[in-house]
Image (spheres, helix red, strand yellow):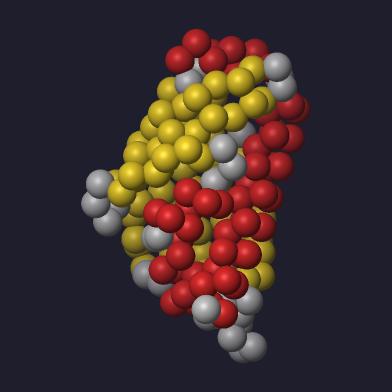
Length: 151
């Protein structure tokens, strides 16, 4: 499954990059995130509860960040297990582009593989849910960045 999109965030690139590395902002932005622990600058552990169609599961997983060209580009990889519901693993590349008006254009490309009961739900349901979760994450993230920028 592949997802890609872009969003314009009304904050400078440095602020957006810092927020993408802030566990508190990420935890508040990730739908269903109960806990996000930063073990190092590149290692995070998360616990997330999601309902996808008829399957509700609590996922535990790890995310590794790779700051390739900060603050313009970085990638992340992760994997998580939802017990009987299955597993998910994948990654994303995030690119930030400063805009002349002081805003930041954020582009992302993400890919994921799923297995277990989740894989049996059908690709249309999974794709639709993933798109909805990504849209909610970036809307909440953008709002959190704006709050930080204005305080």
